Amino acid sequence: MLASGWAEMSAPGRPQVLHLTAVDRLNGAADLSRETRIVVSVSARDFDLSLAIAGPIDHQGLQKLRDQFATVRAAGGFPASSADQPAVAGLRRLAKARLGTDIVNARLQATIQRRTEGFDAIVVDDSLATPYLPANQDCSVHSLAHRCESQAQSGSWWQWLKQREQHALSQREKGVLQSVSAVFAKPEVAGELLAQGLSLNQLNPSFGQFRPEIALGEPTTWRGTHQRVGYAGYLGDERNLASLEWLLKEVWTPGQRTLADTELHLIGTAPPSPLRELAAANNNVYLHSDGRQQLRGLGCRAVIEPLMFEQHLDTKLVNAMSQGLPVITTQEGMRRAHAELSEGVLSTAGPEQLSMTVHQLMNDESLWQLHASAATRTAALQLADFEVAHDLRRALSRV
Image (cartoon, rainbow, N blue to C red; front, side, top):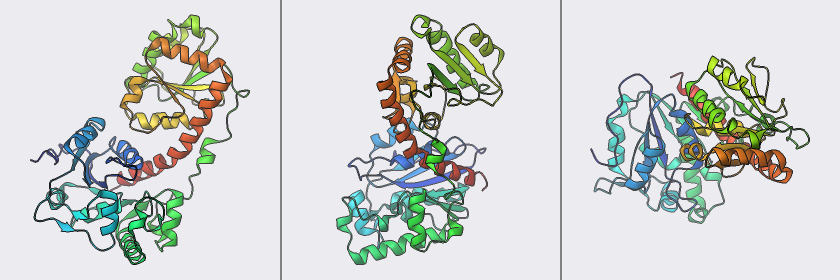
């Protein structure tokens, strides 16, 4: 097997999903787009995912993806061969501008085609990945429309597209979308696709119901909060429990001199006896396990996510940020997260720094306002991407 290809398929058990994408070079770097990374991180929890990447990506780039998404196979970056063919009309100049080449790699096509019968579903999330859709596949195909290429009239690559080629791209894009089982898109992209003639029946049915401003609610204010930091999650999960035990034993109890005036509120169902005992041993730790309390309802000023042992960190961080509150986490958590959360998250290097960061955020209104505003902005941007990713995950669960 070539270093650019997949390892053997995993043993049966989880549904096998092929995800076709292309490198994102709009910002000058050959990597996956933020939207694709979110979808992959969400899908990998439930499915056996094989990622096929069109465009120039080297062995080091593939290995980086394999390290970041430990359970995902990644293939791409095959050398050119005499069997390669130019992209079809409508994709040539777009491919040349975005990928640096308009050639469809025959070896990547062959790698995909050899494994076609093993897949239960296919996801394609980029127009430049559509030439790699396997022929004669006998499974559902879902499209993720991160953008409407033929309508994206800004960007450094648009100058490559002449009017005739724009029409060809539009027809190609429309034809592919009409041939798939369902199309998933954020509201603004879905509107563009509908304007181009895509059937409403094909669109993700929840696209019109999601509103980031509703999910976030009214902005939290300093006066509307107290010197409280909160955690929300399922307390029966072993990884969540291990992180909370680390927080209480290594940070909260030793840091009482710094944190004496700050309350820690733990919200979640099914807390085991050891966690109850740890919480009871601290005068300023409160456990809410009846399922009725919320962080904002308790007047918490920040969210704390240790993330020392959990999986699916992107989702946990964005869900925390959707509270409209600053999020305090650890460098270990941020190292393993894939989401782009540079704003609104305070990453700490160890127990002492974590307790000091909590203290500062509880007592410095200007610092709190800076990070609370950033958390709200970031959550509003990424919540829609996560909503689409979870809608896709639910659809794939039904195939």
